[in-house]
Length: 411
Image 1 (cartoon, rainbow, N blue to C red):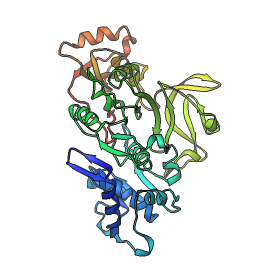
Image 2 (cartoon, rainbow, N blue to C red; image 1 turned 60 degrees about the vertical axis):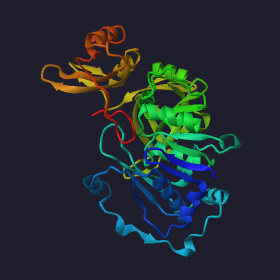
Image 3 (cartoon, one colour; image 1 turned 135 degrees about the vertical axis):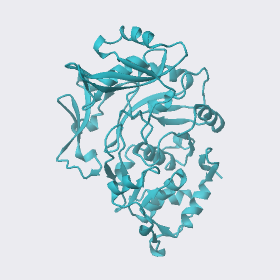
Image 4 (cartoon, helix red, strand yellow; image 1 turned 60 degrees about the horizontal axis):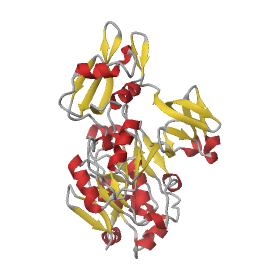
């Protein structure tokens, strides 16, 4: 029996036969899915497709107040309805399951909530065609084993799930594990593919270990630092490293071997740059309550490398700039400078109000050794960035606050 999902933190193991049995034993359906059991989330997504109904994924740690603000309810038992035999026939095997999933359900949609690095979650819905737009199904992919390093109720996790299930792959939970257990799971299960945020990959640094079973790693959700990419190249010494741009609103849009992205020819008419901001055609977007006329302003500021073909590098979020005495400071630029230092594993740059200059730059740093000091960091930064960008307040920490998707939290 081929393994479908493993969660070592809760000693959960499910084969594909277990999955099909659970689907066939389902007697009721609730569109709202709120669970800390990844398998339940995955099963609910599949069941919703087979029933051709909407599924609404909610973070397991949403509070009652958050739920009331987001969807108007905090208890969802009233929405559980019996499954009518006429709308659901038993699944015979994996091939039957995939055939039915790919039958392009007409009414089905998946609703997610953004969690970004700042701001209130926003509701976004996608149909089956859009959510699986970048799934690659092939014989070569049938033997992949996925290290699952995302929250399953968010876009990145959902896309990894579809890539795995439609190729019949095993999924191994890595999300939320300490670095030692991540290494152990990769080696024990011979994981071949991992998609994660740079924050997740920094958990593995520094390390002298190598993980030759991994053939491909993908980074997304945050800016990918070249220094980190080089260090990961030593750990995943046989892996192809890909940087992707994706969002809850649009899904995956671009992929690159480094931090420079190029628009594919078939998407040139659907992507444009306006005042250095990336703008996306509404046909690539999921549906939201936000009114989108024809073009969606992503809020991502970019540096154009070339116009024909269009190549660009992401610079920062539109609203991230910090005003320091009349100078605008990009916190991502300061973080990049910090992450280029061998003494720094991870960093978070933010601001605090100041009566003299308006704001001061602050940072929390996870150091790579005990000899690192504030003065040594500032001295090294002077060779990387201008004086007014150097943090006035530096704090050394063991962990950094994260969003529900595993990104570094900005505020």
